[in-house]
Length: 136
Image 1 (cartoon, one colour):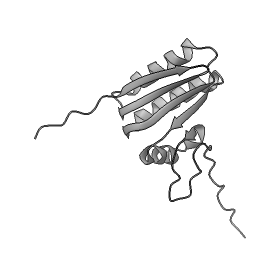
Image 2: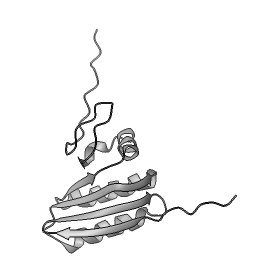
Image 3: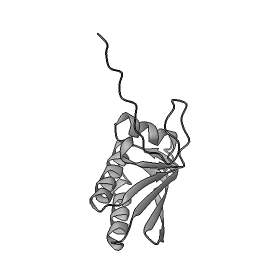
């Protein structure tokens, strides 16, 4: 049985005044995580006046734990510079893994469709409802 080659991660950069958009296509995983982190760090370093970094995730096919780690590294870099990190069009699998890991609230979600579970609408920060207080 021949293993099918996995699509590499491709990154397209679109820069504008005060904002940069990285379009992600393919798999964000152990093999490609470093590529994304390095590109995002280069974008942050290139523009000291950057206010927003957008990661267009509509082309992502997969994100594993190393991909989440990369997103958290990018978040750390944007936060330390006062830059807002947006995840645009995050697929349901990405929202789910970020939710499960308790990190979804760190990101601004743009263009995300609300899930059946009543997730917040597009453009909203994810603030889960507090757990019920036990009575008695």
